[in-house]
Amino acid sequence: MTDNLFLTFPSCSDEQDTSVFSAEQARQSILEAVTPLGNAAAELLPLLDVLDRVLAEDVISTLNVPPHDNSAMDGYALAASELPVHGDTRVLHVVGSSFAGHPFAGDCGHGECVRIMTGAVLPDGLDTVIPLEHVQALDTTTIRVDARTRRGDNVRYAGEDIRQGQVILARGRRITSADLGLLASLGKQQVSVMRQPRVAFFSTGDELRYPGEALRPGEIYDSNRYTLYAMLKRLNCRITDFGIVRDDPVVLREALISAASDHDVIISTGGVSVGEADYVRQVLGEQGNIAFWKVAMKPGRPLTFGQLGPALFFGLPGNPVAVMVSFCQFVHPALLRLSGECVNQPFILQAVSNSSLKKRPGRTEFQRGILSHAPDGSLTVSKTGEQGSGVLTSMSRANCFIVLAAEQTRVEPGTVVIVQPFTNWL
Ligand code: AMP
Ligand code: MG
Image (cartoon, rainbow, N blue to C red; front, side, top):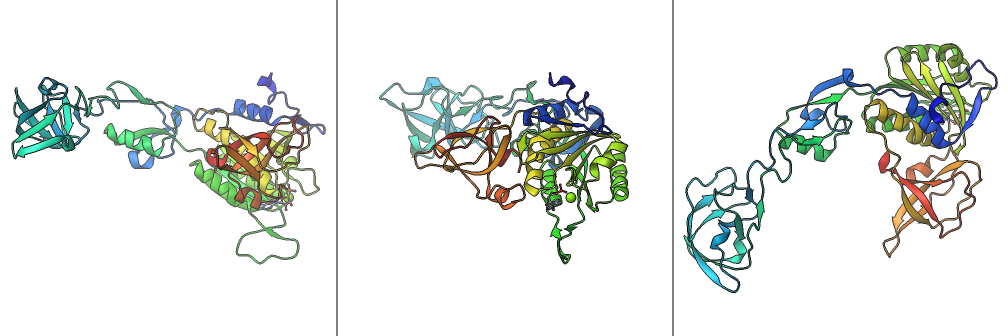
């Protein structure tokens, strides 16, 4: 049913062209409208440059990791047949040493063992390592061992981490710190990754000033461009900051046309409600295939989305919290999909609310919460004070959204609620 939501939208010349979507419908419609950048957009980069980039191809291991059976402990390597029976001890002759990077080259026969260090190659024919602290040294070449150790103990087997031929990281995966180490352990010097989405963003509003400027009566500092900058940076986008755009259709048109020519995504904030100075609608109506939605959510009710030339356009609301909520719920998944990453539902947890939460039915609310542990280890959440959509401190103090479903009404303390931890986004 969501298939056609985007395409059947009335054009923006239509006066009636606002529709009410649920937050999930809006998210789905947006995702359906995004075409991933694809492999034509892949680039081969040095290993150290690919953290947080998206893999453009499966990484298949060309070797076993570890490449050989080796010792997990400092101790003595021997064949299990040399181990004493239960309750007994046995004296063994030490015929040499195997160090990490310097394998033992000789033979180890009946009644013999090899001193071995962690990570050193297990000599041919040996299958067990007795830890140093379980061994009694009788002299420099003779030891006494007991029966605590079992066959195969303290051995790391070739290929136990990664097998040759195995798909170790799949296309579409965003490379993590562990992945970077994994790629290095395969000897990879270069990795094929998707190019970064190019994202242009700007704030609209005659009342806005840049930090560092003096404020005149009625003016405020622009904060939206900074939260957007940060969230886009976290997503490893290539960003262009178009600054503050005045509430003037001519200037706005210029900014939009210029941004659309060489960006994959354009994000504006403000000017999408029905105030007199809200020109985004008007200008977009002339320039692109854009839908104006009323999303049944708070904050973030007005949302403008569509195509502007080759670029996707997101017209976010002006209120600072609404910007962040709309970004997390809609722009973030769209950018993941564009980047070639698989998009899952946001990670959620259940927690007991410590706060009483005001809630009107008929819309999903993304209240800001602090998730923590009760003394018994269970998760609890408290709201971060005043929840107005302009109250940016409510986001700054929070570490999660408390997601209250459309049908939900007031929440009493002690009620279990759904939370989305910010680890997803911020
Ligand atoms: P608008 O949607 O343009 O009517 O803006 C809604 C509210 O958000 C107004 O109170 C604006 O002053 C405020 N606002 C808009 N843009 C920004 C911004 N970039 N930084 C801080 N506040 C903003
Ligand atoms: Mg405005």
